[in-house]
Each structure stands twice: as C-alpha cells, then as structure tokens.
Length: 291
Image 1 (cartoon, rainbow, N blue to C red):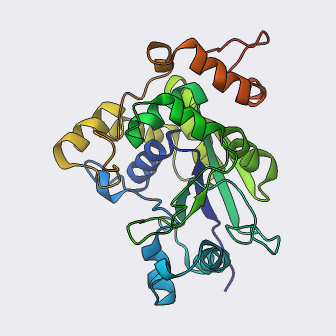
Image 2: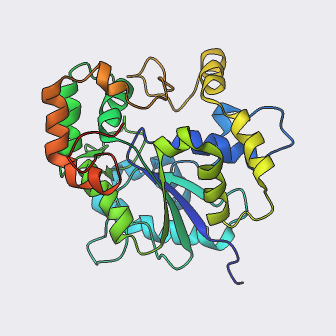
Image 3: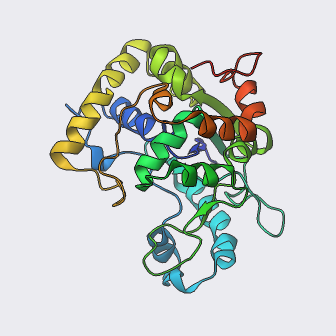
C-alpha cells in the first residue's frame, strides 16, 4: 500500500515555539471545535517509554539507551505505514543524530519531513531555566553550551521519556538545518510572533495542507493566542508542564532576557553560539543582538 502522506517531525530545542505550533495545528485541523483542548494537542512526543512499552510489549526501562535507540528507527518507520492527516505529526527535542550503524535515529527519511523551530538562545536560556525550575541561570547556560547535553540520561524508573540527545544549542540547530536528510522548513519563533499570518501560512503550505486558506489560518491563530493558552492552563492545568515549573506558558515574548540575564551571561552565550546566531539573523554584522 503506497504512502500518500509524509510523517512530520515538529523538531526544536526546548522553548522554541513547538507547543504553540501544536496548538495552532490542533485548531486548524479541528475547525468544528469551539476551542482547543490544551491536554489534547496533536503531535505527541515520540520518545516516551510508554510508546515503546506498548509497541514491544516489554518494560523498556530495563533496556539500555543503546538498545532503545536500536528500536526507535524501526518503530517510527512502522508509523509511516499507517498515517492519516491528523496522526502523522510527532514532536521531538532530539538533535538529528545517527545510530551506531550510521542510520538516522529517527528512521528512514524518504517519507518524512520536518518543521524546525528556532529561537534566540538568549531568550531560550531564560525560558528553559523557568521550565526546569533552575534559579541559577549559569547552570542553564552550561547545559546549552554542553556538547553532550540530553534528557533522561539516567534511564531510571522515574523517567517518563527515553534518552534524548540535545547536544549544545548550536549543534542542535545545525544538525536539523544542515544534516537532516529530509526536507526541513525553518521557523523562527520571532517571526511566529511578529509576522504570524505569513509564517504560519507558509508552514501550512509546506505541510501540503492546501485545502486551508489564509482566513482559516488566521482563525486558528486566534484560537491559540498566547493569553488563551495561559488562561486555559490556569483553569484546567497542562499535563505536559514539568513539576519543576510553576507554569508552562511563561511570557511568550521576544527580548525578555534583557531584564534577566547579566552581561557576563549574555557574553557566554554569544561566545558559544555567535556564529549560528548571526547566520539566522539574531546578531547584526557587528555581533550585537538584533532582538
């Protein structure tokens, strides 16, 4: 049976707009609903132990990271055989990496495409620290500069996700933009805020959702305004909020790092990621932040 629709990765370093786009996508593909349900967003995570437990009938907490990695590609490739318009979206915070045999961790790329969300790492540092409950932002900057950084590296029974290798912020970006074998559409968080209709409509066209026009995109954007997502989290909670965070949806602003990071912290991020930031117009020709 031929595959008519590609599997879609919504890929990002954390706190870069992935969840906002998932809310938009949920609203767009379910226009009959009066309001999106925050705890029923499309594009579930692709790396929880529960997914692998169900697929293989074993408790994957007993497996090593490498043993799980060997199963990930095959599982994702099996999804490609049974996708529909609404269940073909999956989110990941993995950098685009490879298994020990040289094959992509996320499976064969022939029937995969990706939206990659990028955000100014200066703002990411603040938002990510909030999510992780880290008051010492130096520690968060250490993680963003760490070429071995990842989630769930301990593989304990208390971990919900499987290991995800993020690498450093720059490595994460370049792995998807330069090294991913599939077609990748880049979306800057700042453009999602400042040029919303064009940015989201361009993503919709990339996804091949040709039946949706700009008016429908605009209506879906209205359904997932940041203030609405905040209010719904306050009223109903958001199960994806980690226990370390008081709220998942913080401010959703551009440039809030200027009120929080000191110059030394800003310089550390610029030193580590300046070349990538400049490539994606986060720094001007003199090396100063644009936002």
